Amino acid sequence: MNFSKQLKKYREINQLSQEVLSEKIYVTRQTISKWENDKSYPDIHNLVALSIFFDISLDELVKGDVDIMKNVVTSKKMNQDSLKMLIFLLLAIIVGIPSMLIFSWRGFSPFVILSGISMIFAFRLESLKKKYNIKTYKEIIAFTEGHANLDEIRMKRNQKKDIATKILIVLVFALSAGLLALIVKVLTEFIINH
Image 1 (cartoon, helix red, strand yellow):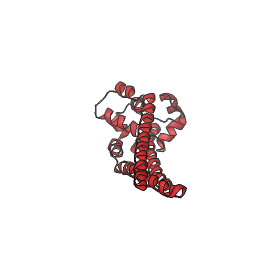
Image 2 (spheres, one colour):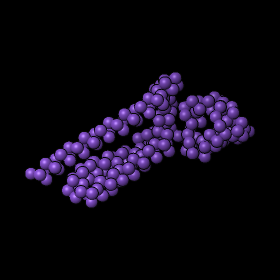
Image 3 (cartoon, one colour):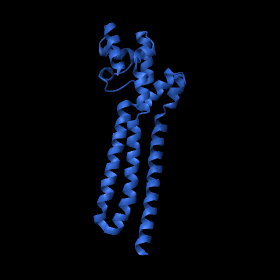
């Protein structure tokens, strides 16, 4: 991404060490290092602080990154991994439950294998989300397109609410998967017994 190069360029133009810059915008030196090495990306608050400190526009600081971010937010890869994760989880339930009922403990392997494949796609999806800090990019896009001001963005970024939402999504998904497993089990037993 261009941000890392822009940050290093403006830091060096102003003859600042990573440590001095970090003190000026109230982050750690390690954070500046991570930004310059593309290990992480600053949130909108820090981007604004850097643009004010260097007296440059936000556009100049993230030059070219907004287009990259838009592509990441709507990435086909993320959509494909999400779909594959769901398909393999459904297959694990639809194939695995009857297999366990018919073959006892030996029928457990299809469920484990299909669930494992589903988990691989789930981890890949989470890895992509973490790598590109999707939530931060959405904030930057909203900010640069003028859809929200900085205070609105900060208010929307409620970590407790984010955690509660994630927990709710996992619970609803788990309950749905459990209900589907129960339906498949009942139907399989009905078919076996009749």
